[in-house]
Image 1 (spheres, rainbow, N blue to C red):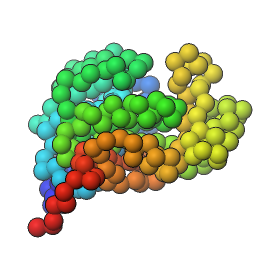
Image 2: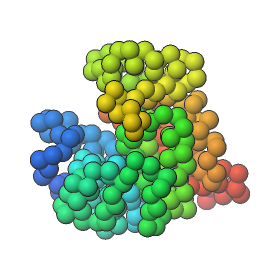
Image 3: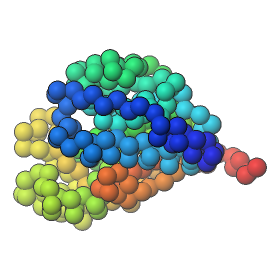
Length: 257
């Protein structure tokens, strides 16, 4: 996307109305509106940074997964009022809220993302704080699956727990110390650490910690994509942000005009 177009997009967003309604069962709402809305806007800005790095002239289709109750999606709707938005989450209530209040298509998720077939490909796929809860194998499989639904020249923007999470855990523990030490040992030995939450061992959902090198190793195994950026602590000054472009890294070079 041309830099001037990105500036126009953000300028229009600043004067747009962002949905301020909060669902009663929104798990991300902690009573702090300033923080809640800043997180959503931060995701939008991460997406726009990715758009500047790709060849996509305009955004017509977006997927927000997991969408929750629209913490990010409300900003996507304000920034892309004419776009076709798809909301996906394992929580039906969250999907229904986004469809009703933001307009778009809803898709109920399941415990195995690779079994989920999306109705079409997308210019932009935003994956906020999903891989932060998965082991390396599922991160590889799910990221590969999602990359197959990115439109040509589109982008996939995903977040991961990197070095910033080590400091974050000291201040706001995310999992028990025994399990955290296990994660750190794996991280130090292999670049990717993971442990289930104690109450989520049946569906293998917990906390992960990944180095940029481990993520590059995973991404380099995905055909048809290239890394457009890796931004440490790029979301909420905490989670790393990776932008993948659906452009063959070994394809013909297009010279600058």
